[in-house]
Amino acid sequence: MESFKRNDIIKLVVAILIPLIIGFIGSIATLGAIPTFFAALAKPAWAPPNWAFGPIWTTLYILMGIALFLIWRKGLERKDVKIAIGIFGLQIILNLLWSLIFFGTQNILGGLIEIVFLWIAVLVNIILFYKISKVAGILLLPYIIWITIASYLNYTIYVLNP
Image 1 (cartoon, one colour):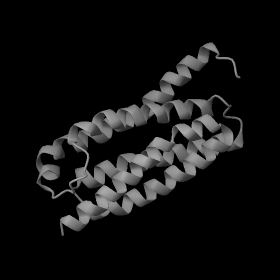
Image 2 (cartoon, rainbow, N blue to C red):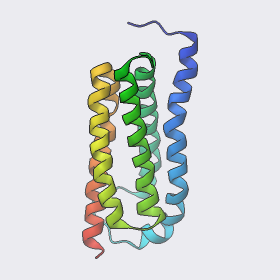
Image 3 (cartoon, one colour):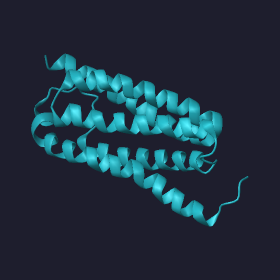
Image 4 (cartoon, rainbow, N blue to C red):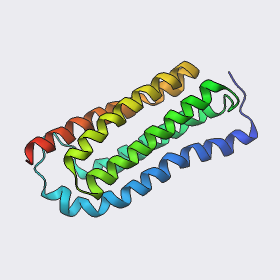
């Protein structure tokens, strides 16, 4: 087991803050649209209640940050680490874009198309992280499960709101 170095605490905090800040930015577009746009949409009976999204996303962002830290501490001089962190950056930007498209522009179809790319990027991220750190890859599994649920919810909302 690797020893925990003093500067690892800084890396861990930064790695957790990155997805939390991205999530916060996305929430700016989301929160204003929930009582208006989102409330007016027909949703399936199985749709999670609105109050559940905040705690779920916060937990997922923290898990993403821990996974990012585990990869980052392997060393930025490694090519596989650089590539994995690059894919992490891509998927976190796609995560933000989904909020901006679906809630910000109120484009259900655009959100559906975009979330497919997000799902693929998260899958690639999991594979690359797992190759470097099994724990880091496993920490992203709840994220892809949630993105899968969100994708189906986005699709169902699209079908129910022609």
